[in-house]
Length: 84
Image 1 (tube, rainbow, N blue to C red):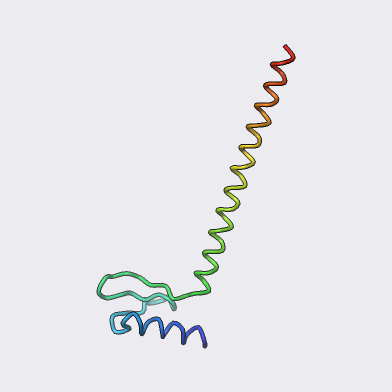
Image 2 (cartoon, helix red, strand yellow):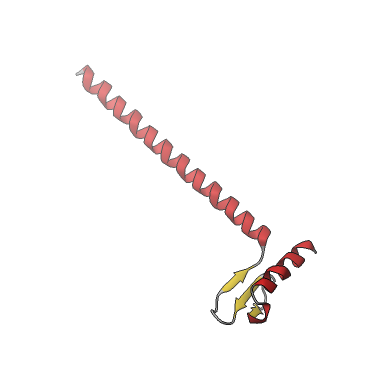
């Protein structure tokens, strides 16, 4: 109930009379003037931001591992070349 109240406040600030509910989507509204779609699902957005951050962190970890593997390979090549 509180979330609905917050969404209505947001819509009032965005000139509610210019907003049309998108059929079949409870949290989506279309601005008649610009055609922009607005998603008022705050918790869904927070979950998206969280997942995006986690994915970015995982990507950085993979890149760091690749870099470390390349460094190890380089060291191994150097050791093998020093033995010759």
